[in-house]
Structures are given as C-alpha cells and as structure tokens.
Amino acid sequence: MTTTARTVVRPPRRWWRTLGLSFVEARPVVQVIFLLRFAGGAALAVLSGGSPGGAVVRGAAAWLLLTWSVYLINGVADVTEDRANGSRRPIARGLLDPAAALRTAYALATAGLLLAATVAPTLVLLGAGQLALGWWYSMGRAPLKRRVSGTTGSVVLAGLLTYLAGASSAEARPVPHLWVFPVSMALWMAVGALAKDLSDVTGDRLAGRRTLPIARGETWARRSIAAVALTVALAFLISAQDAWPPVRIASWLTMAGAVVLTWLACGSGGVGGPARRRRPYRVFMTTQYLAHLALLCPVATCVWAQGHYVCGG
Image 1 (cartoon, rainbow, N blue to C red):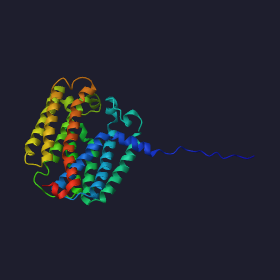
Image 2 (tube, helix red, strand yellow; image 1 turned 30 degrees about the vertical axis):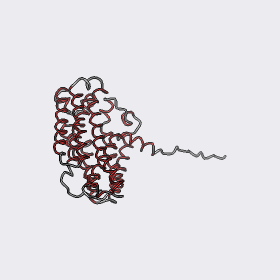
Image 3 (cartoon, rainbow, N blue to C red; image 1 turned 90 degrees about the vertical axis):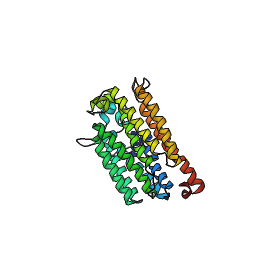
Image 4 (cartoon, one colour; image 1 turned 90 degrees about the horizontal axis):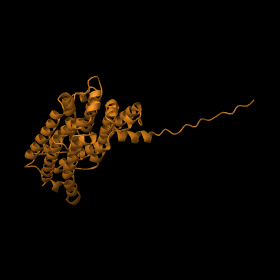
C-alpha cells in the first residue's frame, strides 16, 4: 500500500499589502505635511547659512518612518471611536488587523531610528522623543488624547520636534527670526487638533474623551477654535514683520486661513452633517500646506539657481 504525500502550497504572505494598508491608515495627507514641516526646518537652516545635502534626504526618510509608526499606533488605539465616527480607514473597516498593524509600527520605528543614526545622534534623540510622545498620546492607562490640554500640547510638541529634526539635519545656525515660522506653525497645529473634534463628537464621547464640544458644548468650542486661530495667526503676522520674505508671505496666508476658518466655525458654513462639520479642519490643513509651500518654493528655487549661501541675503 502506498501513500501519496500531499504538498500544501500556501499563498505568499502579502506583506506589501499590509504595508500599503498601514500607510493608508497613517493618513498620507498628514504624512506629507510632516515631511513639509521637516523640509521647512531644513529650508530655514539653509536661509541661516546651513548646508543642505544627503543628510537631509536620509533624515526626511527616517522621520517619515517614525511618524508613519506613530500614526499607525494611533489608528490601532482609535479603532472604537473611528468606527463610531464612520471612518473609512483600513483598521476601522476591518481590512487591516490591529495586531499586524502594531508589528508593522514597531518595525517602522526600528528602521526609522536606525536610519536616523546614519545622520546624527541628535536626530536619533529627536526621533525617540517623537516616538515616546506618540505612544503616550495614544496608549497607556491615561493617554494624552483624552484631554484637550493633552491633545493640543502633544501636537504642538510633535510639530516643534519635526522642525528641529529638519533644521538639525541641515546644520542650522542660530539666526534671529529663524524660529518665527516653526513656532507659529507648531502653534497653528493646535487649531487643527481642536477643529478636528467638531466632526468626531460621537466616537469621542463613546471613547470617553473630554474634547471641547463634549466638555463645554459646541457653541463654546467653535468660538474657542476661532479665537485660537485668530490669535496664532495675528501673533505670526506681527512677529514675521522683520523676517525673511517667504516667512512674511506664509504669515499673510495663515492670517487669511484664520479668517476663513473663523467664518466657518462661527457661521452656518460649518454646521450640519459630518462633511460640513469638517470644513474648519480642512481649512486648517489647506492653510498649513500653503504656508509651507510659500516658504519652500522660493528657497528651493534659490538653492537651485544661485546656491544656498546667497539665499540668506
């Protein structure tokens, strides 16, 4: 009697599909703005007399891996409220297993720190700080995301760390007004953190978060968001008067964005269904994209045409 051994052929493990879904979960539009912040820090370093080079490219790649990891962990932690809010991201839809997402996040974090080590020890320290902040924001017994102060403080600090990472990768030099742009735009991130809560009330309440609309009511929240936006934009506009022209242009764009955001937050344009409630956040996001492009495009053109030492004036 003979037996025939059956060979079980398993389908290939599609790790690339998991990686792709994890990037979607990490919100590509947010990852791009983090890269723009990193580039903004590098551009300001160039204006101060720093030296752009291969280290900036490696640093940007390392920072992308780190922020990708942070937002992937956030997606795992936010699955309950994301589903309640009707999120279309992969974990909420059941397309990406949370355990696989966590494994991917750990691998991305490790790769990001190793790549950062090829740039400078300072970048490794900044990257480790970004990872620790991201974990504390989303995980643990008392995550920072549950309170307004924790949320706004986290996003502002994450922005500052990103600008510092870009500047350090390009060997920034201490120059007056160098930090007007990064500090102002980091504070602008607090506007986005508050505006995002307007469309996420259902899920946030279910998850036990104490956002402004939940803790103080929607009317109070909308007025507070408008007040913060106008205050940050006005402070940026005033402090940028003696800064480099690209920074001044960015401050004007931020002021314009704050006015539109205020009109939506306090008027009827941002009231209604989830899409209308998200309009103030979209104005926030568009404003920061325009502000960063206003800084980066002239600097990139100058570096390409004349050399970075001329760009500083």
